[in-house]
Image 1 (cartoon, chains in turn purple, red):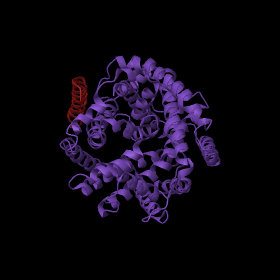
Image 2 (cartoon, helix red, strand yellow; image 1 turned 90 degrees about the vertical axis):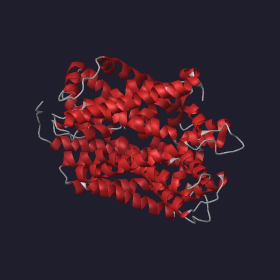
Image 3 (cartoon, chains in turn green, cyan; image 1 turned 180 degrees about the horizontal axis):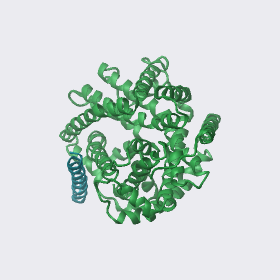
Image 4 (cartoon, chains in turn red, orange; image 1 turned 180 degrees about the vertical axis):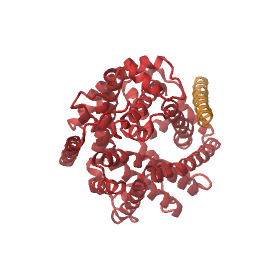
Length: 475
Length: 32
């Protein structure tokens, strides 16, 4: 947790302010997405807009696999209520998941039909919300989904923390003792670069910074609206939900059932195993377990839905802003293209396509984009102007130390992370060290597809800028 | 959980709750 909080203070909070501020600034020039926003920050540079393409490409790539995983949550919420996996043990739950994904035959899942059905429903819900626009769609959804989410999370957290020791054979395996796995400080881990990378990644992903999403949302703000307090409030609310509520659910309950010996391997086995295998198993052991399992999956589905719509928003806003399409036209165009792009993820799930998309869209692009935007903001745009821009219409004075952090510490931290990550994880993945030979053609095809999408977006930016009359900002 | 773990948890939860309360109090005050 120590690297996590350091990353939050030095990366998460500053990046949140950067993205809120540059998003609102870009709107002055009629731009709501990164290519235009970057160009507004550095008008003299003709190439910077192509770096901004990462802010549309990254979230688009994440969306393509994220939405499929989101649909599993909907499926599992349904199966929890209908008791489809009732009585299954660890191996049974694993087989249930593989069967659902179409990776292995399973009596309940002769083919991928159920998974595809829930995917189509999830996709349709996403497109319906997005096509209704920012106020009637996205804001409306968040207005009722987030309080509901909070209610589900509090219910689950209270249930978990009051569970005590569910296994009479191990009276010391309590959920409160399970909090120790997260909170007992381990100073030796501070020397491990992997821990810092994972902590920074967690901060990026959960705050949605470095993706390109926050700046697009902020671009809907008028010049007089505050960004300093709003940005900080979004971080604080996220921390409350993630650290206090989220940290009190999965890990403590897994500790109480699997014990101190196995908890590390359960946590390391990844979010999929914890979410789709361990948690349903655990819920079977407690009274009203099916209801709590339903709440768990419904909670994650709603959380996923609010995220997935935000991931597609930059692409839709880009087409809407730069090509003057109507909202429904933009949603339909982007929707059809992403629907096609999702198919390889669904049908070649076991071939490494999803991991490859996660590597480029969900990891590499995030850190790269964050580095570029921080350098642009603090160095090209200039820290004095940047500081003034953050405080324009602000309801909060940002502590002065952050002027120094924004200019020096955050970019340096990002460059160190990018370098360490590149040599530790990036290079082996790029060279496909861990990819089985049979999967390599699929991985290469995915890379080819990603390159084509990236170049296609660059071409669209080029066309849009050629058609666009030269505009002057009103700053 | 170790005593230093409890200390870390209470400190962090306290800081997060205080920050969240501060932000929302300020939001309500300025947006009224």
